[in-house]
Image 1 (tube, rainbow, N blue to C red):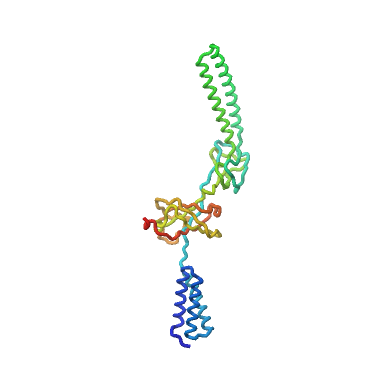
Image 2 (spheres, rainbow, N blue to C red):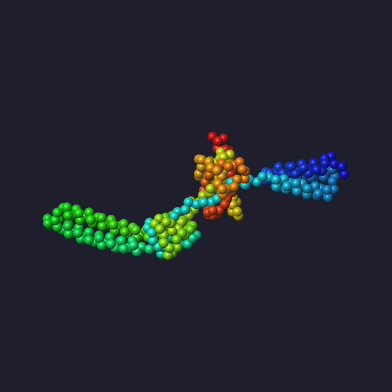
Length: 307
């Protein structure tokens, strides 16, 4: 059996053609092209079926190896964060009741927790007693002023004392009302920091709420990739066992550079100077806070070129 072309040359040509098509993700077209080449060689040179089969197997194997040598784009490493809403009492106290658990969905105005109000109740009762005395003083001064027995100065002083007492009662009632925590936003209870029976300090959060719109992705890009990004751009997001169609929209690009954080590893040692990018995911319900992600840029014209 004579051949005008060496067998190794034919294999190499088929593998190169298939590799080029695989790089363009045209798998089916690559295999079909390789098979067509082999059939043309068989018809022209009258090779045996066994030789053709061996040649096809070698060509497919070479194609697979060529595809494996492609450099896979790892994207940019990042993680998921969220801007939590912390709900805390104005004054210190003991948590008496929790009405939610971690993971619960809440709406605006839902009752979340209660803190003991013994001191606030005592203060309210004291101010109510002061208000009652101030009311009596005012009534007496007003009555004397009508008959001409009292002075205008006494009446003005009684009015002033009455207004102060009313304001103190209103303040005490507000303090009493704030011993109960209500949801300021709709979202998911992310974490509970104090349980029933525990003392919570003033302005220390009892729990945190995560609104879906407050979830964000944080990742770093090297200085060489920065011209490809602009606020409002859409990026592709990948993570372990996540949906394949996750995207996010960039809303923040750092104006100053920084060195690669320790938690982010760089695939190339020269990419030491990076910029922080933040993006809002299109489907926040598909991600979890703290989850590692890979961010891939969509191919586009650099911003500098468009300008």
